[in-house]
Image (cartoon, rainbow, N blue to C red; front, side, top):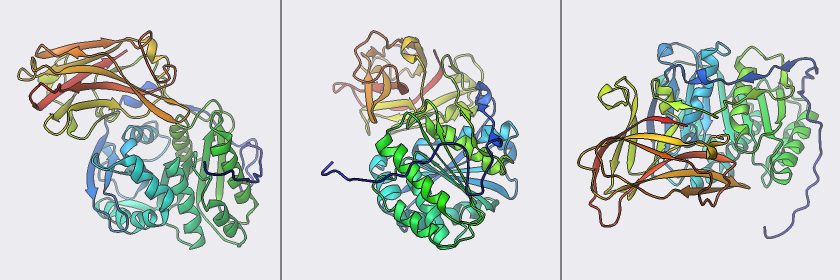
Length: 454
């Protein structure tokens, strides 16, 4: 930080409420995500856009429940940071599965593997949101909604952190321009400290506007007060001073949640309020949504929904396989990983950001099908662990396991007691990598992964 900035924060009590004066008795009840979130199949289609108004290529992931494909006039939810949100699509469709919201189309807008997402997202969502909003409005939305029948009056935008800033920016700009691009806005832990959000919000509330949209903003009580809690409280206070017509504004602080664990809770509760018939109900009274506990788990890939928890790096692609010949138990369901070690020296197969309780004390097991022409080439497998200290992401790698046998191989590892540079008690994700040694020839082909459990 080059200098100190003195900011005057207006603090507001974090109780449920809105501009329309929700009463304290009308709180959204708690809602727990259970393991049946993996009991249904999920369909996803993807395509890449060479954008007209921004600098980086965009990947669009569209998902729906297969039985609802082709339904007309469905609500549509647009997610920023789509490269990290494939794991989150199931949370939205779970609400449909539980009959809390109607069938929906989910659209993740992010970046393909070859784009440096950490850099691109900060530029698009935080530094130049004007161009990204134009790209969303004038290119992404028309392309998506030219392919699918959606209800343009129930279009919702979601984002977290820098994406949360973009949600707030889009809400303010659309409100000032009297554009009703979105019916609802959901922002998790908006990163708004050193931005123009406050001035724009003051401009908006200084005018008498009839804004007929829903806005849900939230953060975690364990987040930095300086970076997240105080700036968002300041924004809440500005918005609640305004005479903004039919604006339905909810805000919440999730107890015990940090910057990363807040994201899905905000998404679930925001959709419950906007699409779940809770339009007359205020923000969660206490906990609101409660995320899935992963204390023990078994990925058998019997449903395609399990597949979307997993990613690969550049130089490899993964897809859902229904070929029973490549499943540990001989039943349909595994992950096919197509790797090209001429393009990369390391194949990474890992989860997106999740919080796994006590995973360090569990023995993690992966079953990997090794083709005959890969066995014996000198490649090795390592276990991966992702954690955070403050907000810095740290990757730990285990010692190597030699790949010497073809067919199904079982690899096991427990992290507790091993050397680790990250935070072993705050594990955000995990996976495996297969590494080509410098003396090994480049291999290209398909591996299969099944039965991941702990």
